[in-house]
Length: 263
Image 1 (cartoon, rainbow, N blue to C red):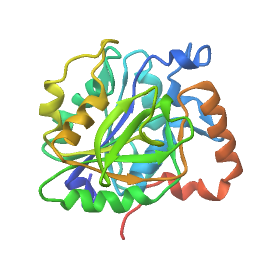
Image 2: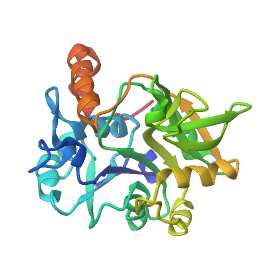
Image 3: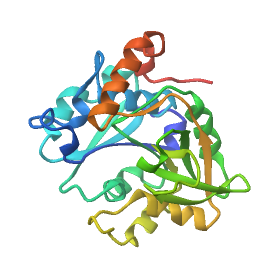
């Protein structure tokens, strides 16, 4: 199956793992990312962002308990547009976002990476333009997409100096800015080498913030600020996300969930 031109340079990775404990009892018998957000499963919205960026070749990583459910919902990818193809990998244990991303190395096959968490909903076209620039950038760099929030202490927060990210602080008591790190990231091919050298955090996970901070310290972390971002991974934010999607049907029509090709 033919890839889009951008997928020859950038591999799409959708992370849909974790145990879903914050959404119990709704997740007692299903993957969190299959819970409905208005009229679609949550996972569709993150897929819509990757497809809108022009990516047709996408790896879906999820846990072993609900892998069958995820495959049943998404299928091969054909329903999401001509040329779309999904590949699946199992994360045996929930060891963190960076650990899940490490599973993408064989799939990437030397390509750069566009990575999104499947419980994120984003209503902004900035990533499409950003991906085109990222795919051609030399020397290659990483990209974080930031958004302004009122409760920054609940997120990973960017500290900027002279307009550049110099550090990502995870849930800081005194946030250095209101710019939270969203669940959409772009990484060059050396990300896998750096993940291999990460040390598990106090909660026993390989943290994506540690990977981002590696690029920040090296002066290789760029950023874009986006709007219309929601993290639907907890009960209250999930409810807010559902209301937002329901109130903005013009932003979430059928075309949003199919591969976008061309300029």
